[in-house]
Each structure stands twice: as structure tokens, then as C-alpha cells.
Image (cartoon, rainbow, N blue to C red; front, side):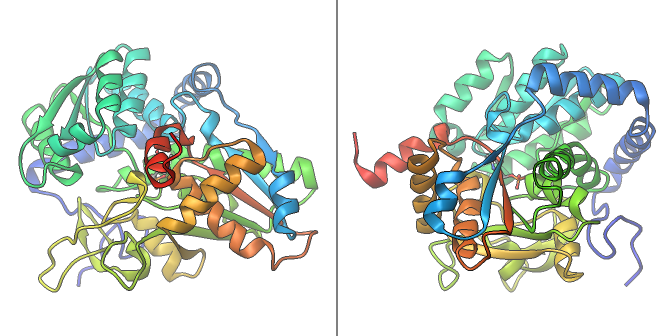
Length: 392
Ligand SMILES: *Cc1c(COP(=O)(O)O)cnc(C)c1O
């Protein structure tokens, strides 16, 4: 096989139709120009501080630490950002890039709606038009998010093809992009897709890890022993990991084990997938023997994706990061425990990272430290939680 020119050895690349190549190449050129442009960076920084609410605090979870009785557990509070999740770090970056490229129309796909909302917000503040593709089934499941996107000024396209979910929304967004090359920017929501998206989104999310590095060092005069983040597409995890790669911090990503790896109802792409091509990238994917994409499951919509960012595939194979599994019920219990001990309801995605920290902290010395990235807040998930508890 020919050696592909990309960032992550055999992973990543630009596995796209020829008609998209000029678009992707233009994006690549412009992004790498602006990446080191002082004006671009200071404009973005201003938005992150004044609009999104950065820097987010590090919180020492004293009660949880005491309860588990081992390593000190710290939380990186991305749940406190505008919109309630890390996604705004990326959408502000890419929307600003769209503006600099004179593309006044932004399109995006969304599954559960979180990326759609973050895109709508970033486009509103930068006075860009936004149009969001969403599968009709997803739209029906996530009515409130659909409403939020509309109120924030986005036009919504409900997609009727296929299973009427995320992958169908992606297909329609790509068709739109090919048709409207001149004025349209495609804003992808995680470290996935053809190069340069995985690198670009990683750069925008790396603010998480950069802050962790400074804040934890200030608190403890050393780096954290372990950093843990959940992995869907992998953007909050790579944002956490990347700045810590040159330290002695052990990096652990947590995949959704769903109803268990003995079943087919999970989204453990790195642990159970095989190499393949999806959405323009070479990475690990959950596929059958014919190369068809398998259905995935997770209690958390954000982790329910059959692929994973190519840089995680690379980090795993190089043994620079480890990827563990947490099942639905463990994430559910971690949600309840963090809510009760610290008064913080984590997103069910983030609860996967919390659950893994709980598993390992008790085995560690009290002098050691774990930082967990809380990628988002749990308000969006309380109906799912209530269904399981029957509280109200
Ligand atoms: C979307 C989302 C995720 C999963 O996306 P990554 O790209 O893997 O970070 C995780 N947590 C929350 C709160 C999300 O909204």
C-alpha cells in the first residue's frame, strides 16, 4: 500500500471523492496560514474568554476523593462553558475560520443536537448563516435541541434517507457542500473526517489540556499522574491529552461499553473495531465482514459513533494512551455518585470518565492525582436518568 501523507502514520488521510479535493485543499492551506496568525489567535482567544467563559476551573473533588479513599480526584469543568459542553471551543474556532475564508454560509450535521446548538451559537455571534442537517428520527428524539437551534437562528434540514440518523445527516451535508462550494463552510463537530479536520479540531480543543497543565502545576507543583476523558469521536479526549503528551502523565480514554462487550450493543471502536475507512479517514471502525458499518449503542448519544478520530488510533498503537471500557450501568451509577457527593451532574458521556476514575482511584496512593475532563453538564440527560429511577 502506498504511504499516505498525513499526520498520524497510516491513520487519517483524505479518503474523499475527487470533487471534494479542491475544497479540502483550500481549507488546509487557509487553516495552516491562520494557525500561526497572531490576529486570528487573539480574536479567537477573546471569544473564548468573553463569550464562552474560559478558562474553566479545576475543582478538587474532596468529597468524592474521601468516599473512594485513594488518589486525589480533580475535575476539569468544561461543563461550565456556554452551551454546557466543550463543543463551543471548536465551533468558535471553525466559525471564525469560515469568516476569514469569506464563507458566509456554514453547514453542519448533528446527531443528538449538541454540535448543532454549539454551531448555531458560534454562527450567531459571528453573524454567519447556519444550516444544520439532522436525521428525522434524531430530530423527533431531541425536540428541545431542535427548538434551541431554531431559536438561535439556524435553518434545520430534517433528513429522510437511510436510518434517518447521524450518518445520513453527514451524507446530506456533504452533498450540500459539493453543490455550494463557493460560499459554504462545512463545520465538523469532532476530531474526525478527512485531513485537516482531525488536526484542526484537536488544535481548537487543546485549550483544555493547556489549561490543565498550567492549573494542575500551580496547585501541586507537578503534573497529574493520570488524565481521563471519554471518547466518542474523541475531541474532548485529544484536547485533554495532546498538551500532556510530553509529560509523565498517563493518558486514559474511556469508550462506551453499552450493554457490555459480549453483546453487539456498544460503541467500543478502539477496543473492538478494525481498520477501515469512514467519513474520509482511515481509522478503527465497527464494521461487519462485508465492511458495512455496524449499529452502535450507548446510554450517551455523544459516544454513540461507529468510528473514532485517527489520532486516537495512532496513540493507541504507539502505546502513548490507553483506552478502557465503561458500560451503561457503570456510567449511570457514576452520574448519581458525582451528583450526590459534589453537587455536579455530569453529562452521561463524561460520567463514563468519572466511572473509570472511581474504579482505579481506590488502588492508588493518596499522594497521587487524577484529573477527569467533565466534557459537559448532565441537564440534557436527566430524562433518561429519571426513566431508570422513576423519581418523578
Ligand atoms: C459530543 C460530546 C462528547 C463526545 O464527543 P468527543 O468528540 O468525543 O469529545 C462528549 N461529551 C459531551 C458532553 C458531548 O456533548
